[in-house]
Length: 546
Image (cartoon, rainbow, N blue to C red; front, side, top):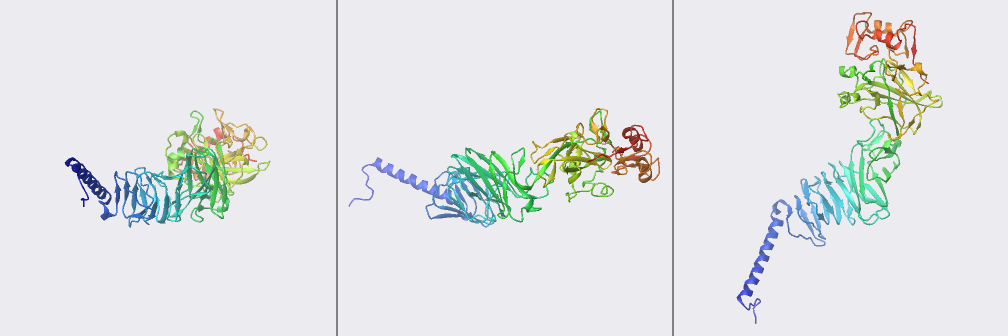
């Protein structure tokens, strides 16, 4: 009987022995590389192939790190007591199951080519991308079981064949907020990226009253046909205000458009996606007002800017003054139930001095042919260059739950006489699109109501709102009953002509320098007489509105 190994010569014996020894050493190396951290439940694969057969699984209770792809037909189960991490170095993994209430964090991009199952816990992208291949499937997702796209991370879906309501398992915090994708046409090689945030869109107009505390960013490439997306929000947790007022909005980087549809019963918002990067959410129907106005009191024709002494003195209130005494009797808020409030940083020095805030103004949106029906009011801020901005100090002003259309717009101020567009000659178009809404220029327009006497004209030719309405009655006069000069002297200075009040926010401070003075340089009495009434004690200025 021959031996199991029969060598004909020494050289053959040597070659076989060396081969066997190298294979044994390779097996020992593989075993050491894969199992060196077995006591910690950690799987590290450096440079060898690692395979899990069909029906089998590898349970990992610590971290998973691999320098090579893991195309196994079996499953990798992450089941740790504490949070775990996956570092695939941008490679693929076939089948993955998440069973960790503390979550699994990505330390690199990863691509799934098989099945992703959520049993417990979520995947946190932490700035990386989790790609679902064109054949990848996901199961088990729901609240607390999804992919959270934090720190600019995203879930990417590769497309080979067209999708029909393919569910992208994204969420934020503890709530599941999936996106369902559908495509038509030839989109081979295309992909779509999804991010979700559990906060209002950063692009949302600052004063909208009804909105979602959730938004989704969708990017796409290679779409040659059509792409549509449906996002599902949390029924109660995500809704601020009245859900029935919500419209499905999409932002293309420049403009908002309420071109989507909303199903409040199913808590979904749906859109056709025609741009390569969009942000979607739900907001109440809004229109934007872009306007400019100059107040005579602080305006300097030489610099063509208004002075911001009130801001520098720190006396402008964070909350608009028109809903409080002494202004609330002359300024009636309509369909504007919440007092507008700005953050204190809005009144800080701005990069451009022309953008520093001067004061609050009061806006009236009017309809009907006569322009005398006020449908909504807003308090807003005015910058030194005259731009009227919302409470963030920079955005156009929002009117909520108002349809696109042509309106009459009036601007008023607490110690100036208001002015309005003339409904007979100019009704500006207000829309939700910033690029399409009309610009209303109260500093130069020939379409202002009341003719030339309804506003002042500065030495540089700019139109200004008449100042001097110290007693807030819509009339400026120097003599006679209820005149503004006596109001300053008696009511504000207690009949002391030598008195000076400093760092004040008062209607009696008609030149808006944060002081009330009856005599001496730059006093308020002389401002009324010389600037507003043009050195006449008999002229009377009256607010002229439709």
